[in-house]
Length: 314
Image (cartoon, rainbow, N blue to C red; front, top):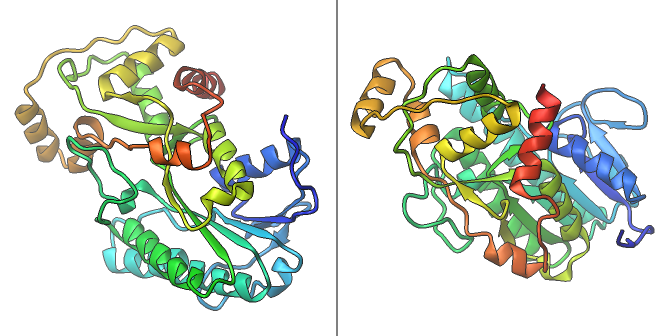
């Protein structure tokens, strides 16, 4: 195991969330000095009541060398899009900039922001996303993340604090919620799926790989000022992903052919337009630049990550 500078103090926001919790556990295992900042009261945490443009962070940041900002708002209110936009903007955009400004004033040396690949767009089509692409956020969540990135880059220009931006795709792993959990339920039902000829390309990242990458970004001089698109070292179709998951679940999965146009029409008719992109569309990341920037390779293969996820959920 690598040796790390134990004199540095790392502060992590959102340590009761999926990424923040996994990161804190790994830092503890590696004996890296850190403090947990979160809204939920627990032992050995610094409680922050809210994340917004008026949150006071000064006391929580005393002596901190690096901030890793994992906390944010990601739960959509489908009823009121205006409430969505305001909440995302207050927490993910203005809340992030407020934290970063106070961190810089407090003498924090590096600020690592966990953004999202959705800043690049919803679909990569035939060409993988890169950090040099024009941003193309489509919903309140990704717009708020992009605005936060823009604000952080402005703060970095004064030279007081280094900024590192990480844009991961869908994160999977033990305890992950959302699409991976839904897929496990579908596979367990044993229903035939109309995906036989689907050959899309999607990138994912295993939580333990993301955590390892974040830790490398704490110490890598080359990460400073970079926007890093990170994913596992495999790109996979929805059909192949389901087959791999079914294998680890010890389930047989049956696919049948349905023309893409017909499938798209059917999903629209039942009000599942969002599934069209997730099941049929491509979201591929060119991770070469991120790997090269900090000379990193994922410690876990995609197969290991899927196995660990499936084992935990079952």
